[in-house]
Length: 515
Ligand SMILES: Cc1cc2nc3c(=O)[nH]c(=O)nc-3n(C[C@H](O)[C@H](O)[C@H](O)COP(=O)(O)OP(=O)(O)OC[C@H]3O[C@@H](n4cnc5c(N)ncnc54)[C@H](O)[C@@H]3O)c2cc1C
Image 1: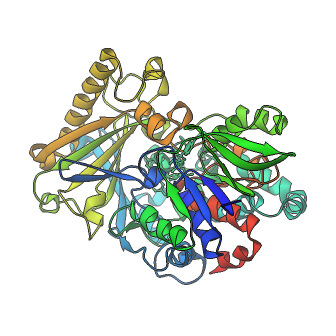
Image 2 (image 1 turned 120 degrees about the vertical axis):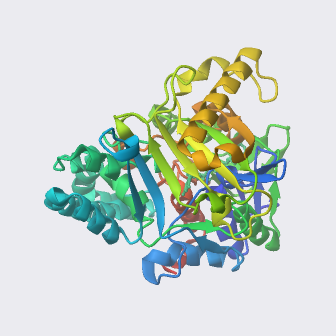
């Protein structure tokens, strides 16, 4: 066979798996259906403005020793030191809640690092909630520990995972089923409860649905700060791609995989949509679990395919990409993200269900260009609004570049409404917008080949966290799962999914986990 391994999908999950195998001298072929590499780390350019798609900040890549900086060291090893990260401001997540009792009708708080400082400042603001905050901080720590064990279960060799599941299963099940809303139940002040759940957009769930374990993992990744890749998120594909090529591998774009080839009960290659076949003894699928199951012949591990089919997809969103005239730092923009809730329900009402009739109830606004010291072109912002898939579902069978008129009209209407909302919420930038473009859930579905436009792959419920079907080793010999559907979402979670898949093929990689 020409290749030692084939990796399907070039998001951070696929890139990490491919680069890790390349570091073990494997020749890897990476196949990407889109015409750009990078999955949700891809960037695109319009009229001199460069936009990020699925990365606005990450944790774990700072100079800290031990586990706190281990993701950065792993990336450094995989990318041969060519990936650099710049810190966001110390206070990097500004939450703005609608509150009629406050001047300007808004209550605002900025989260930063370390987490203990957030808790201390919240205690000063809400002195009557000191006990509740202490309990929340304690639960948060416990959930973080339980999450580590849980995520390892999705990657450890199956016999070890079974023993660990048997020993710790009960505790982990309890931990996974506890929601953030339950952990916040002791806190009486509704504003404080909303603040603590306000960054749930990072994992796409409201507090009532979010496993505390997931909340603690994602929020905990920013305990020591937040960073942005120098040169933009596309640096991941450039840097890790160079590692793959240096070992004799190849990264191919516009190369959609239509099916996984089987021989004597083993995965042995892939069939491309264009007709060709590529063969390798190990196939790593980083295109999402549902796409992977759909690519298998019906009679290959039918029970597993059915199990994967039961999971619900995560939510969808619209994104407004903005380009500005001049340096927006002079208008007070310091690179912090803004989490804005326009409805009194705060983070309990994430989704925009009727975007042609109302403003978005929740918005995330990121100014990545301010955080990238090497950014080129004009300053930009990316504005995300969680939005119900049903709003766009009726056009799901139309094709990119040939959508019907009523879709274009709806899209343009939503774009104008969001733009007006942005101008109202950021008055100092209102006159500086010189470029805007909207992406809908159908854009995401097309560019990422994401079923139902799912933003974060499978919905991160307790059932999904606990299910052993989402293991890097699938029941099909030779087929491995990588990316955000394995252990956890986010750049770090998806990368770990990729790394564990590579380590299951090449066990000497496990020791690199402790770098
Ligand atoms: C709007 C948005 C903002 C986000 N912001 C952040 C953030 O600030 N920080 C953070 O940590 N995380 C963030 N995330 C989450 C993070 O981007 C994802 O969890 C992560 O990038 C997923 O990586 P992945 O490799 O699993 O999947 P993807 O990046 O989706 O990669 C899957 C790849 O597979 C390809 N593919 C699919 N089907 C086929 C096929 N048949 N053949 C070949 N290729 C195929 C797709 O085209 C895609 O390139 C964000 C996500 C979104 C959507």
